[in-house]
Image (cartoon, rainbow, N blue to C red):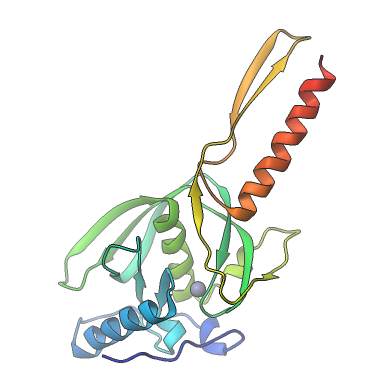
Length: 212
Ligand SMILES: [Zn+2]
């Protein structure tokens, strides 16, 4: 088991499409072991084989700090639901993050290390990581998903993207039309999303006051 160097942008391998794994042999098992070790050392959420210079359809994701890292062989997204804006970074762009549009939940199928065919539906960080890592296998990078007016922003190298579980519900009363509505803005947000949510809440508050 060894740590493999992580390729960084603009290395051209990051733009190449990875080939499907035909047989889970020793090479693939060693690749998976090394990728898990490399991901742990880098304190990352996910890693695709392209990022260690291997064009095979293998990704590893650490879904929660206390759980094991899971390897997904030949993963494919079969369904996407909803859209949300999330703050995202990538081990191939050390020190940078940006706000991207991702699905609220995804369904995917993959082969596990024992060769079993697995189907899952994921939300939150796992959904985001599956989209991000499967993109890597197709040569797509997170900056391709940056929202129109967004630019990559540099972050403190010690910064680790993290999210908070919060609900921002805004109730707007329209006195003129004697109606009101509730708007749930985000359920799981990064610090950048939180800022946007609070800005939007302010706009709605202004709207409410103008109706008084
Ligand atoms: Zn990445």
